[in-house]
Length: 198
Image 1 (cartoon, rainbow, N blue to C red):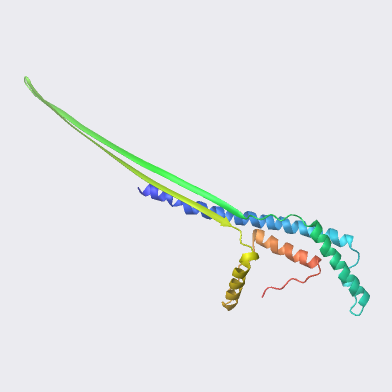
Image 2: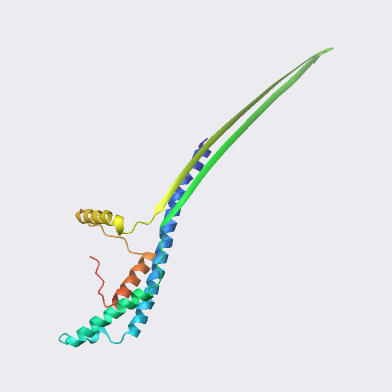
């Protein structure tokens, strides 16, 4: 029976592995999207002449040109933006129907002969046990974006986070580090100054 219970306990692990796998795959999609945006920003900057650093503080015409250039860049980025892929819903159906059967049999026989008289005896025993266990699980994993109906939920979470004592985050690794590096690179190429982490 314990073997069956042990097998059924693997169901949550299967679901957990699926969720983590989707999260990892989504991070990879995000990294590829940012790489495409970075290449696109370089292309748009090449198509729109002028540099932000060339603008002098008192030069009104240069500031006007800079504004027009940024508007042109924004328009081109919107028109040429690469597709962004998002896992929106994943459904997992797990059904396990397990059975275990144990059969045991034993027999003992013997005989005694005294002259013309013989006595024989035998004993046989059989036992059978069968256990059955079943489990069924239906899991739905939905992407939750901070827009639409979810916007209020994210605002409440952010407000609650402000009241909590600050907890240092672990260093970004793997896809997380690549995502942060690419986001900073894109922001820098757009003339934006990324916020410094406290």
